[in-house]
Image (cartoon, rainbow, N blue to C red; front, top):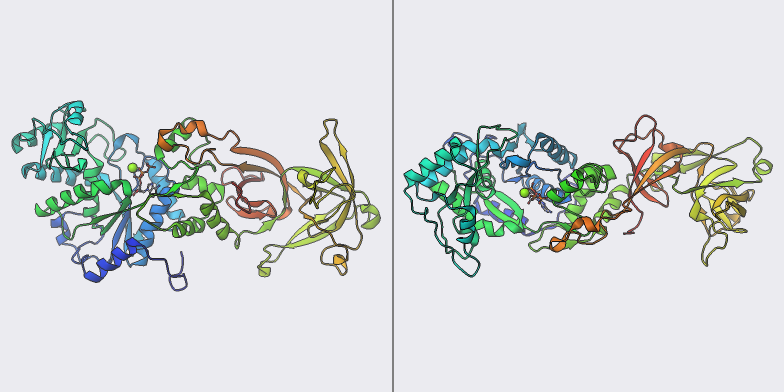
Length: 590
Ligand code: ATP
Ligand code: MG
């Protein structure tokens, strides 16, 4: 975690201004909380909340988290950390069908990996919305008794039609004014499983003529005979998100409930509900407040759990942690670091208007984070042999030359890497041309180049296969030109190439990833995003790498000189097998 003493001051934004104003005005005072969510009566027994603010990150455990969630995690945990507050991890599991323990575990893992923790002063602030089902039931009954909710038995179709439109007011349901006792009776029957799915719902009783459609008697509870991953078959009615979410915030004494802009129209209902429940004595004041910020949209990426789930289920990618996916698990396996994602979140900031962020901003943060950390290494991704024909005369038959290079060019204290130069080395196929185009300063017949950290060599030609492809390049060492020896610089060359010795190079599988979608907005306007899949998003090559990478644990990043950043694969780089994922190039190349 960044040290607050030395970290640069963070840029202000509208959320920071709101929090600072709330702290200054005392608007947040009087909240009781000691880690146990509760109603007004229970909280009255608790001490005053020691946390200055409370935020929450409330994912639904119906998939793996993605880069958009990373923005929300950094925002919620970051603000809590900066203002002496606490951020809760809330599993918003009110929708039984698609939720599972696997997703709960993946969410915990992603938040922790990003460097955040919901345990504060020894108290765990991990909560499950399903733990509040009893309270939600009670709150719904209280609303019915107060004439603020009713059971509607219209068909779903009638309900939709009678909701009206932006230009026409809604038509009240024939059940709207039924006696509270009757609604209550029906609501109990719903809970007891006496009615079919879709036959009736509980609705708030607000205003069928409201210009805000969300206030035209929104549904609060529906019947679902579904098994819940935590409450089992205890319930066959489940609260709607719009009803559940404000209550979850209130029970947990959240002060600032941050959500994305599409919930702006829900805010009046959020306030309506909490005000009434507080007036009924069920919730403690001051009440949480909702604030909206722009969601993260990244060009060429899909960030919808539903669509990501489809890619996984249909086998278009290899699992939720496929390095081509913008899931946190995928980004991690691709070689993204927690620091890079936090830096990215800091750079994009928060605003109140939607915008598209260019992918280069994400990669820029990644390179800035990796550059000072990643050890350097040489690798040849498209290998062709280079034979040094005068090796025996100049160096000696059977001899190898020990070469050295810094682990990191700007951090000499990190020491040196060792590798051997011999009569045969691997070079990149693209570093040789029979007929060099203008400005090509690498190997071509008669051309001179420096083998990085080694000798200057002069190319004498190459052997070709019958199809014209190069089989083997030949060159001669220019004596007395070895890097780091006196007079080595006397022979000037315009090109330097990387290489890996045939004597000590290690064979490696390298997975070269490209964008998963060819379109910048693959799902814009409801387009079929599968049509935009890039058929060449993964290319696997057999490469050679220098011996210094031999002992790297899975998940270790390197900069392969001239090529970019690569990471050892977290699954397959095991048992002596070397498997690298390309994280990103050295420059923006998308
Ligand atoms: P999806 O549409 O991918 O399923 P979601 O919003 O339904 O996403 P939730 O699990 O409900 O997923 O999200 C948890 C939190 O993450 C919410 O507070 C939501 O606002 C936030 N979040 C989700 N996607 C983004 C995004 N692209 N940018 C910023 N915040 C996001
Ligand atoms: Mg959701």
